[in-house]
Structures are given as structure tokens and as C-alpha cells.
Amino acid sequence: MRDSLSTVHDAPESISATPMPAHLDPWERRLLDDPNLLADIAFSMGGPFHVMYPARVAQNIREFRAAFERAGVQGTIYYGKKANKAACVARACAEHGAGVDVASIGELTAALAQGVRGGELMVTGPAKSDELLWLAARHDALIAVDDLGELDRLAASASPAMPARVLLRVLPAASASRFGMTGDEIGNALAVFGARASIRLEGFSFHLSGYDAVARAELAGELIARCLHARTLGHPAATVSIGGGFGVDYVPAEAAAAFGERVGRHWFHSGKSFDSYYPYHFAAPGAAMLAQILDHDDIARRLRDNGIRLAIEPGRALLAHAGCTVFRVQGSKTRHAHGRPYRLLTVDGTSLSLSEQWFDSEYLPDPLLWPARPGTPTPTSVGAATCLDSDMLSWRRVPLPRPAEVGDLLIYPNTAGYQMDSNESAFHELPIPPKVVLHDAPNARFRWTRDGS
Ligand SMILES: *Cc1c(COP(=O)(O)O)cnc(C)c1O
Image (cartoon, helix red, strand yellow):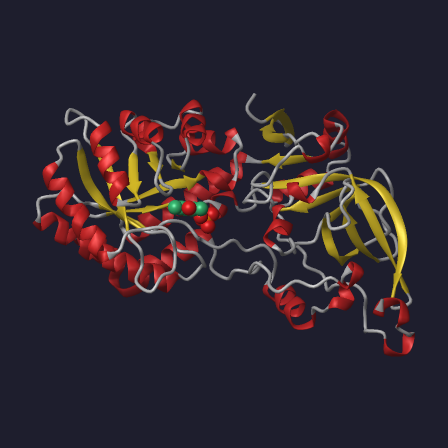
């Protein structure tokens, strides 16, 4: 209501959000610069689709491995698979020496099907099903046990001839997480190992929310001490897993700062507001954050000196800059806010393919309008092809470089981590967007396939 009553006199400086230009990888620029490729794929798919470039996953794996090597630490990467279901990611892990962190039978078998060996799997999650525990033990996976009952069930189903490999997941002090075991529970668990030959204690794990390197380093130090104590009791504890939560740098620092300082309802379609946003600028992402953890408080030396292997479970960071999501503009209206015009688009998919809306927030890296053409900069909000007023991909008015027209493509960058499929659904009987995998071909060309084929 306020919008329609506003006069030019009290109108805000701009109804358009400040730009949040995503960092683009060379492969993304090639894709955007190609005069035909995106339109050809869009024509073939006939609806929204995701693009995956697994060569970038391989690069991310190499960067993490290099950080371990520089620190002289034996490290293992387990890709946190819930961040993206694409088969090509598990395949890239198998091909480039990373394991996979799974939490369901579906994830476990999908990883095996892409060539990840059982011994390269980590199985996490709360109170896992008997079936998952049995399968994990059969495949010699490392199993992060979350409670004592689960440990008993695992001990009962595994066999002393091939003891199940166990990490105990620790509940950090002062944490309100529902995951992990308290100090007392860990003490009781240690006693269970003494009595059961079908389980073997290989170490300890944690997974923290947030992106704090120091908190992870401090907890890693505690887990090293737990390993040393467990060894005095005769357990072969030689692994510490510090979970995931490695940051991704989506946009430059200045853009994120300007957005944070100036954001207000006057930027958003229907005056919408959000309480918080994901930290889209991250100064020391991925492998750089791992290096910070290893540098802190002598962690690298303590791991080395004690022959302890550091495991990490990056989800989002392993997928950094490895994918994007493409929608076709299907409708375009002009609306007014504070007396000024803006575009309100409808695209051919839903916010279920851009999951941030489902965390009561909005995905802030700006979508790119394709093809690039000169024009008049145009504030643009983006709605979905559903009958829900609230189904919006971008509530804020994105400063697009020209008015979007029906048939244009809108590309949301860097969506491989969590945005693509964590909320996918055939709501409205709309098809689930397929994933298209880009492969490097001779003469600096791309070829593409459907994921999983
Ligand atoms: C989700 C999850 C991860 C991956 O987290 P990211 O923030 O994507 O790196 C790793 N380990 C466990 C146990 C998880 O639940």
C-alpha cells in the first residue's frame, strides 16, 4: 500500500538493488560468450535446466589437496554429497582422489555407481538405519556414529572378520546441535569398543555450522587429544574429521558491503524484506580456509607429529563455480514502485530450483541476461511459473542491463552448491530441471550430455 501512496518527493534514491555481480570462471564466460550454445541447449531441454562443469570440481579437489600437501599433513576429502546429487560430481571425486560423504542408501549406492570405492566413503547422519549401517560396514566405509544406540546396532550387524570402521561424532561444548555425543557418551562408547570385536575406533569427527576457521582449528585440537587418549586404551585412532563448512566467494567484497549497507524494502517487489542473507562474499574460501585451520595453533604439526590424518567433508566448497542454472523468460510486465517503472518477469521454472528462497532468504548473486545486448538498465524482479504469489526467484529488483524480453535466458550463476536440487520437486507437475554436463572438446569447444548418461 505504501508504495502506491508514495510520492516522488519521499521516494528512495533508487528502487533497484545495488549490483551483486558474481565472480565468473573462464568456463562460464566461454558459455556466455558462445553465440549458440546456451540457446541450443535451452531449445533441446525445452524448460529450465542446470549446467554442471565437473572439471571445476576437479580443480577444487586439487586445491584442497595442495593445501594439505603444503602443510605436510595427510588429508582426505569426502565430498558432502547432499549439496548436489549430480552423478558427474561423484564421478569427478572418483577420478580425482576424493571420497564421498553420504547419509542415505541412495547416496551410498549413487557414489559406488560412479566408481567411488566403499573404503572411500564416509557415512554420516543421525541414528542411521540398520540397512545403511550394514551396507556401510559391508563396503568398509568409515562410519561417523552419532549415538550409543547406533553404535550397539552397528556392533551387532558387523562381523569381527571385517570390523566396521568407526568415527565417533562429538557434540562440541556449548553447542545446541542435535548431532554428536557428549563427553560422557563418548566415554561410554569407548567402553563398548573394548567389549565388541566387530567395531573398530578409527577416530573422531564433528561438523559445525557457520564458517569460522578458528573454531574448527580449536575443536580439531581437542579431537587430536581424544585420539591420543583413545590410543592409550588400545584403539587405533588416527583420523580426525572436521566436517564441512568451507566458504565460497560468490561476489566481490565491495558489492557485498554496498548491498548490506543500503538494502531496504524499497528495493523489493511488493516491499518484501528478509531478516538475513547468506555471506556471499568470503575472503578466504575453500582451500584457503583449510590452510588457515592448518596454520592455527600448530594444528598441522600436531597432526604430523602424531600420525593423524585430517579428513574434511566439503559440500558447497567442492562445488564452487562448478555450475549455473538457466531459465527462459516466459512473461514480462511493467509495474511501478515509488512512481518508477520496473520489470516483473515470469520464468519457466520455480524457486524450488533456486533453493535459497526455502531458507526464508534470497539468492543474491545477480542473474545474467542472455543474450547480452545494449539497452537501458532496468530494475527487474523475477517470478516463477506457478500459481503462488510468493514463488519468486528474485524479489529484489535486480539491475539488469536492459529490459528482458520473452525468449531471453536468465542465468543464475554459481548454483551448484545446494541451490539446484535440495528442494527440487515436480510441484504443479512441472518437470524437474535436468542437469546438463559440459565437457571440454577440441578447438576450445564444449560438448554436452545429460547428467548420469
Ligand atoms: C552438510 C554436511 C557437510 C557439508 O557441509 P558444507 O557446508 O556444504 O561444506 C559435511 N559434513 C556433514 C556431517 C554434513 O551434514
